[in-house]
Amino acid sequence: MGTLSHFKSLYNGAFENCKPEFLVVLLKVYSVFCALMLFMAVYAFMDRALNGFEF
Image (cartoon, one colour):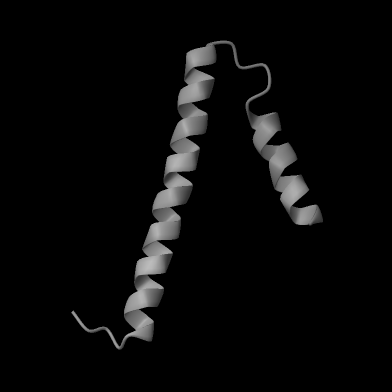
């Protein structure tokens, strides 16, 4: 659990003192989008690997 709180503090610290507020919101939304895309890619790969790469 300490690792998650460390990543959270790094994530929040990266956006500290950023002045254009819309850019901060855009970057946060983009980072969540990238995390979702990465999760979907890993899920798709694991699904294909567990099902014998049947297409």
